[in-house]
Amino acid sequence: MLSLLKAHCIDNQIPIITDESLAFMKDFIQKNNVKSILEIGTAYGYSAVSLASDDVHVDTIEKDLVRANEAKKWIEKYHANVTLYMDDALTKDFGDKVYDLIFIDGAKGQYLKFFLKYKKHLKKGGAIICDNLYFHNLKESDTRVRGTKHLIRKLGLFRSFLETNVEFETTFLEIGDGLSISILKD
Image (cartoon, rainbow, N blue to C red; front, side, top):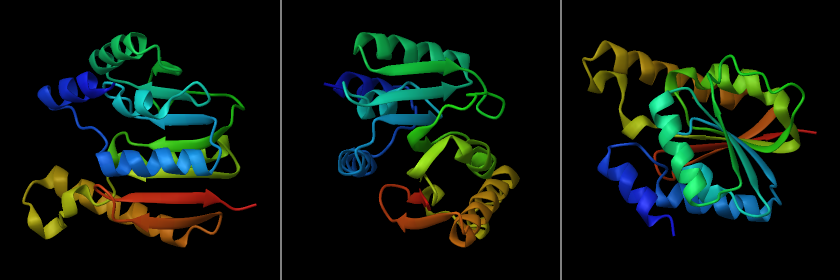
């Protein structure tokens, strides 16, 4: 059971995927015969370990070395079918490797850059799922913190990009803190 890892993340105030979003993703993986996942943003590895199975391999990228080292411990503890890359997702090169699913859950202000960089690593008909698109339903007017305003603005621009992107068919779901599912058109 992953209850120990989940509790450890909560105790250390490490953000993790909501139960509802995780259940949706597991169902999506099963229904769409997903076998390979690229996750951007590992933290302590909770979602990577949760999504991996004997049949599903997860490659995950984390640039924070403290978090990556913690994730490594949990990946090994659970013998998860996960490969952890301690690297910056904005500069990591995966060559011509492709995935059935890309899960973006890293730095929220970089979602557009992640999407544009990694879409070439998606198989035709594959999906890019992005988490935390609503950022706790905050609006720019809800905060005086300049960095938070900027982040909320960037997430809004990213949602607009997804809505108008003709390469992908995107659906937005009010699950957890907001998910988008972008299917690469044939």
